[in-house]
Amino acid sequence: MSTSIDQAFVKQFEREVHGAYQRQGSKLRATVRVKNGVRGSSTVFQCVGKGAAGTKARHGMVPIMNVDFSTVEAQLVDYYAGEWVDALDELKTNIDERQVLANAGAYALGRKTDEIVIEAMQGADQVVGSPATGLTKEKVLEAFEVLGAADVPDDGGRFAVIGWKQWSDLLNLPEFANAEFAGDEQLPWRGTQAKVWLGTLWMPHSGLPIEDGVRNCFWYHRSAVGHAVGQDVRTDVTWHGDRAAYFVCNMMSQGAALVDGSGVVKMPCLED
Image: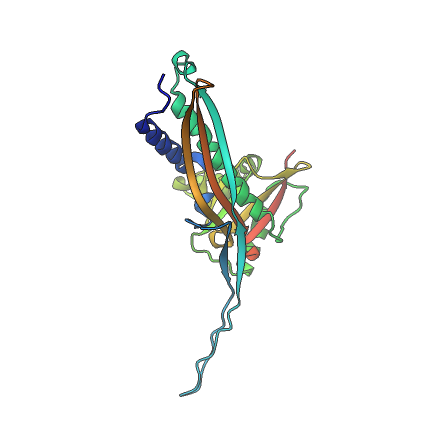
């Protein structure tokens, strides 16, 4: 048995892990602000307030908007997901061990990515509805009003992430699931489990926080949450002769921060 793994195998494995991570590893990465290639242990996201326009007299000074500028810092944390692959075990299985491990590692890192994004959104102060009820039409419309009152842009950058129980609650609403209201092309069971409703992409997620039977769901704008990437998903495969096995190590360095709390609304929902 060679004491070094073929480099072509390593490169192929790395591509498979990265591809699986991009394809199915994280649901939320594409829904928030992302800063890649961060150097150092932290980075900052800019938060720009509202400006006010005014008039000016002929030859007078142009009025200043007096926009408030602030920054939010996101700390980067290193995450790892490793596994041993015994050289002889590969001879006894009928599955592609390399692909299975590539997917497992990528999905583990993807869940961690979503976890840190959700943890950042947990810091939002805007909460609507009673935690003693599920995801009702009234709760949805209240959150809709809060976003509108805060001038959160309705520009295609709004997202709502909810639990599977809440997804079932919405399926009982004709406005969400009936073709007469939503149109045939926007039915929630067509294609992937996500749909556009009220100018927002709604998607179910199994990793939302739950406490005492109450799950926090989130309605937010892309610009309200920042996701920093110091090292994207990377894979290292090494041969250990003393174990007669390969060690597959997947790693990344990422962080997230709540940039603008006015762009995130929490919807606590009871799961009975």
